[in-house]
Length: 555
Image (cartoon, rainbow, N blue to C red; front, side):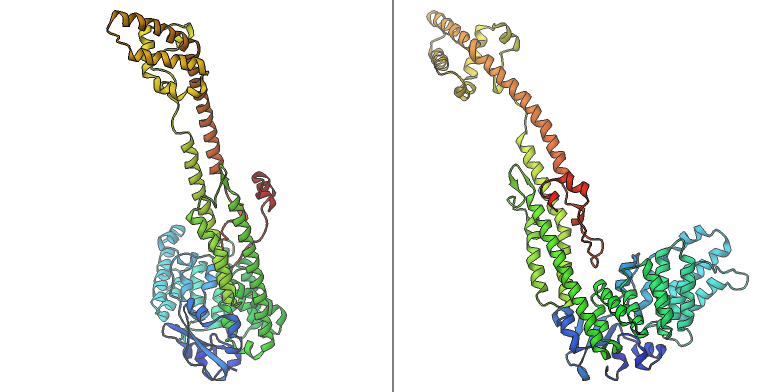
């Protein structure tokens, strides 16, 4: 049994022989939620450092009877929208104030009034907005009065009985919390009625909010002692929000109290997989602790499923890394490029394995989260590889070939075609192009090239200013011209034309390869999961596998 300190209970339970209202009044934490857990099961859930990493403090001294006191900062009242799974993971039933900020409940007044044009409706929504503000300020009695007016009206001002948000807020006020404990306001049966009304009104247009309302109705029924209704309402809510951790845990508790222990164990294990901290709530629940074999079975089932999930995710991640390693460009693999992002992704499996070594629920959960972080890094790593590959490809074909790199600048296509050019042009071209021809020497027949080179050398050394020099020069130029026209210039032009066409082909191929690089992606199955608590392990679709080929198809 738990020690005789009701404040050490995490949640209200029938076995405590304490009314729900009295439990809230005794609990009333000052910003910190304190609860006891059974030491016999603690080491299977988390070590002290693992608890500390999640902001859960362990009291320095153990409680009597083998229990340890934990303390956790109460969740702040968040604003902004949230999906059903996220809200369910964050929800602590004694801290339900934050639910008013979730999703469609927190509509702006102007947006609501646009849907309800009449002056009477506007008044009702103004009362609702005022009630929301008072609720956030923990003025629960005033909030109750404002939302009552919004629903029922007052005097000549009409209320609005068909707005589900009004009834949801009324349900939260009636349900109570660690901060809202007034006996005149907290009334679980009336809270259940308000939540059921909200669910009915929201079902057609706001199914997520209807699911929230049904789970809250199940909570109200549970604390009122109506176990059958608690099971029915919670099941219905989970049909819409199957990953709602608080709702799943609630269903497990209700089934246990009903004596349906096999299904209760399954649902509690489901809740722990959705939110690992629910395991702490379980080992601090006096009803579960009194049934040690049952609780042992729940924890064992959760551990086995966590371990299996960890192994599946780790194997999936190793396969993703293998596929990433198979990416290459110009025979340079992504690993050879030594990208920082790739190095980070390769360290993750070892890091996750080290975390999982303690084999606690918290350890497996953290190891899985570490691997999921890796999955989120993989696309960034691939993008860095693609950018690097494209830059390498672009560097291969930077500039088009220049004509002057192959021919002296004064030699025209017409001259080459007709076999004619001026002697002065030949002299100038021969001298100015000597560097290019030397570069091309390996492509010219030896005897012809040596003759040309010798003639050009003699030409350069002649005293061109004398009559003899000019005569000799003309003779040499004719020899040079004959040799150049017959072999060199035509070969040079052919080489230039080939280079130009080759460049254009390379540019077209480059554009095609860039497009192919940009289309590279990991299979959809390796995309980061939308929810860290749920990891889908299905294979890639056939079309994707066939399109990718190679390593992709082996999945």
